[in-house]
Length: 413
Length: 159
Image (tube, rainbow over all chains, first blue to last red; front, side, top):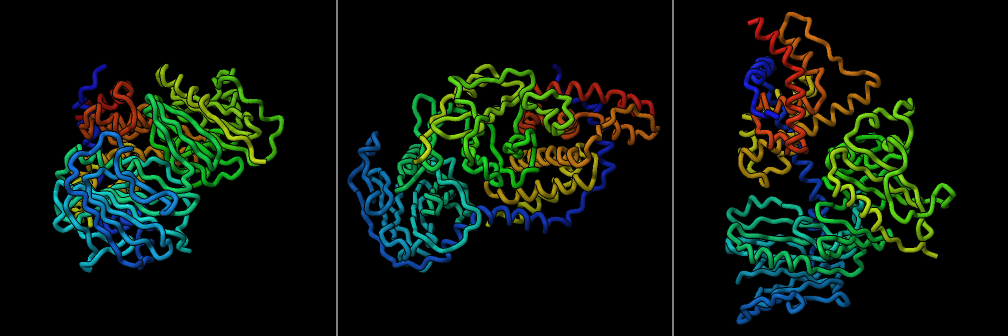
């Protein structure tokens, strides 16, 4: 099929386009304000935390000069801090420099740390040792340097607004959000992540990479970040043989999925309480719906409308909701294997497409979906599975394998 | 702080093109300006992480097309029962004919034609912007162009 540019058609469209007067740029202030607000929303919690703290300054430099090689096995790296005493720990490559940071006043046992591959001593803006989560001065930091900083804290008594699900461990570089460091000319890029544990913020992880850092040092840095453990973490993943297993102690389940899939790190339907969403994963970026009308509405029970709106015909999506009420006869026992229901057009909930009660959205979507109530381990669930109309046979198999991999903890009591 | 001067220069240089692309897709100047403003706001929120004009241009077009899709779907929900009419051009004014013909195209076909034939993006870039496969874009292009051929004929006749 020819996909060369159709110049004649382009010319017709261009004549039409040029009739559209050049757009005024007087909306620039509004654009800047909205953009700045979006950026600020990502970092408001972090900034508030920084403003609150005024901890005791103390740092301990532990240089490990003379130990040049990094053991291949991370178990042979040094362990800094401990889960029992400090509530967290991290594995540090022996030759790298460790600088202990003071604990915040409201969590005296939770010391912080900054680790770097460079012979560089960090200090705060006033020239002394950095306070609790105080900004670090990077002037003079080597261009090939990398660094990791972790600052845990305790309860603030501050309202951070909407709570986030607990952070998924181990951390990966992709889970950290890039921060702007335009004030450090030629300095390292920064990305960070606010950790949530047990429904509260636990601390903040920061990753710094100099513009000329070697791939080997960056890889070592990321292995170190991946080794961070915190006490009480309820969501963690294990990877083996190309498959990833997510364990969620809060919601009491585990699920295994292949590469190419991603788990939503937020509840995609925060306005839904019973049933409540406990898991969503898909092959495309999953967007949160701010309200039930924010995206596609396919069924009487809404399922991640904004995410479904972004689903393409070669994608797949799985969402699991747990019933908050008594398990009635509506919930069949879990089948031995999940699979498409025995009806022609399951996207319509097995209703004929001409059913006048169907939402308009349900009539023209690039996927088919199945809504499967079932019970397992004394708990009632609604499984929603959507498969793009152009999904490969392999992906179709993966979808049902993901559903079959679900393992549940028994209901408490 | 991110480079505000750089962003403002990029905004001034590229806003008209983004607005026009959105106007050709949404066929509504006001909606197009709103969508373009939001797309540039999102670009500004990531400015500093996006390097180079090509990258920024791709980002803002991709975001704008995504927002066009959302706006179109919501508009369709709000006006229940209205179906885009596939009318043949009857008005002697070619502009009306072009708009009518574009309105008759499904959204994906319209986006594909506008991005490829008007904006000049490669098919692979269009696929990335629309979050779909190149082969799917090629299908949209073929169908969209076929549906617009009548308009092209009208235009040529009138010249």
